[in-house]
Each structure stands twice: as C-alpha cells, then as structure tokens.
Amino acid sequence: AALAAQAQTGAGAPGAEAGGKTLVEMWKVGGPVMWPIGLCSVVGVGLAVYCALQYRLEKMARPDIQTQLRKAVGRLDYKAAQALCASAPCMLTSILAAGLARIGSSAGEADASSFEKAMEEASVEEITEWQKPLGHLSLVAQIAPMLGLLGTVTGMIGAFDKIGMGAMGSPEKLAANIGEAMITTAAGLIVAIPSMFIYFFFKAKFTGNVAKISRLLGNLSHHLNEALKVGGFAEEDVPAAAPAAVPVQSGTTL
Image: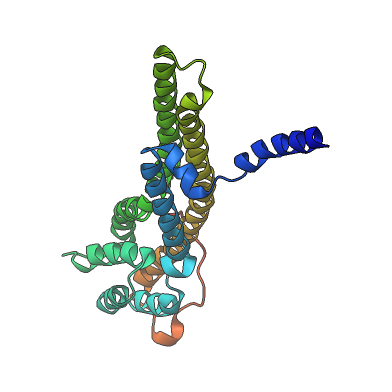
C-alpha cells in the first residue's frame, strides 16, 4: 500500500508542476524579447480600434451634406460648396474641395476637365494619408513573428552555451533557455495572426469605401458638367440623380 501511494504521488507531481505556470511566469521565461512583442500587441489593438472607427463609410463620406453639395454644385455656387466641404471634413469633401478650388480660381471659363484633374491629384494624397494606419497594422503583423524568431534564436544560443559548459547532464539548466526559445515564438504568432486578419479585413473595407466615394465624385463631376452646359441649375431644377462617371482613381492600387 505504501508503494502504491508513493507511485501515485510520483506520477501526479509532474502534472501539477507542468500546469502551474502563470502568464507572468511564462512572460519571465520568455525573456526581454517579450517586451517588444507585448508592445506590438498593444499597438495592434489600438490600430484595430482606430480602423474600426475611421473606416466607416459615413466617416469617409459624410452623408448629411451630400444633397447640399449636389445643389451647390448644380447652381455653380463654388464658394458655398467649398464652405460645406470645410464644415464637414472627410475624404469625400477633401477631394471635392481640391476640384472646387481649381475651377473657383480659374481666370477663364470653368470646365469639368480641370475639376476632374484636380480631384484625381487630390485623391492620391487623400488615399495615401487615410491608409497609413493600415500600413502600420501590416508592420505589426510582420514584426511580431520576427521578434518571436529572435527570441527563439537567443534562447537556443543560450541553451547551446550551457551544453558547451557541461550542462548536458542537467536538463534543468537548459530548461530556461529552451523555454525562452519556444515561448517567444508562440507569443509572436499570437500577436501576428490576429493582426494579419484584421489588416486584410479593414483593407477590403477601405477599398470598398474608396470605390463608393469614387462613384459619388463621378456623379458630382457629371452633374457639374451638365450644369455648365446650361449655365447652372435653379434650385428647383437640380436633377435628383445623375449617372456615374468614370471613377476618380483609375489606376490606384491599395
């Protein structure tokens, strides 16, 4: 009976030790590389929240002023349209404001081609600026596993150093370095995999919103062209809708 009890105690002890590691203990085993990996996780969460708030269509193209903008453009009232753009900053109004500024400052007769050209130029700047958080999120997704790999390499170097100093017969002396090698790799992947998923999710959402904004700007450009032909629409004569023109961004890849 005594031998059976001793055998049960010996069998249960390793399991109790293996399952007793806390997150703090694992962090300590991971070594100094865990700190930049932890920083990457915090930055990734912050960027995910920012993208969720920023990459909404109503944030990128304010729907509350679109009808007013259409009426102002139809009347050829460039100053009123510019004032509306300034009062509601977003991607749509920033691009539109560049086109309005071009035709508003024209010495000769305004034309739709200069309006479209100015919007094309502004759209490149706006898209580049708006997608910067996506670039940062992609950077987090790429750096985190590299940091994990760095921890793996440093951990294995430490383990081989211990072996070289005669620790081959003492596994406990190698455990810390091997643990560092494994834990940092896992931590880096835990940060990188969700970050990569979030990056592609918001990239697709951003690209879709840019396409919708391009269509809205194409409609406004067509509306301006029609208004220029008749010298501007009266308030009651502004058409309710116009067919879409060629999108502003014809060759931009995100």
